[in-house]
Length: 200
Image (cartoon, rainbow, N blue to C red; front, side, top):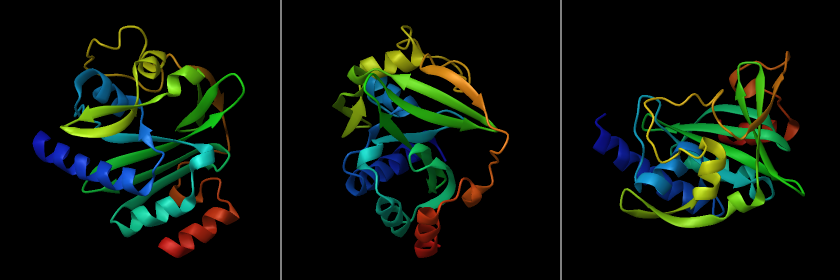
């Protein structure tokens, strides 16, 4: 697909994500594109990054997105520990990450092979703003979040960004010998079993 088609498909996907998950917002590279460029950043690893606070998340949101044509690629973590749901539609990946609120920080986990990448942010970084992306108003985290993730030079475009090592927000890397990327069989819970029975 050319970049214009990718952006058009991505814009349609955002419409459905935000209509189904009312308290969701852009994070990671999607937030960077919104804050810095008012656009999607399309590169060889293009995806859409969506955040939601754990208290706001419902499994029914995923069920509804499947009804709207999304496929589940991967479910990682546990409901109350680093959950992320990875979807796909029209060859565009959508990564939905849960964030958890502690007294002095907001945290999440990114998963890579057998590693847990624990990330921490200030509460101030989680002010949701209205931004424009590809000519459309969207909800996104703002400059404070982008700086805490990418560092003070976030305004300077980079050819490549290593999300496994470079984020300033990574505070701890924990090796988990039991972790395997095996699709739906990752840290499966009864709650998720029931969900998958209804949508597969």
